[in-house]
Length: 91
Image (cartoon, rainbow, N blue to C red):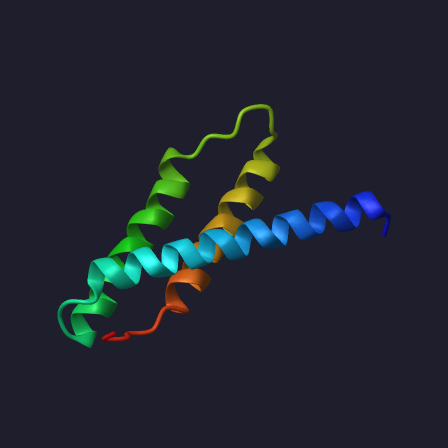
């Protein structure tokens, strides 16, 4: 891999980590009141709404249908993976 490709990979990974941590703090702060079942219900609702929004509202200009389907599938998978990684923490 070239230096430029390595740098792009590092930037992409850093961006993903930063967004994940910001989202983790927001979710924790918003839903720290209540019990664990309520927390998980909120997370599930967010996941379902985000995935629905990706599939119904996201339109990528300048891409072919295959690319758009792939991006939507990957984005939906990232949403599910990220949100299901959150654990209830009454801190």
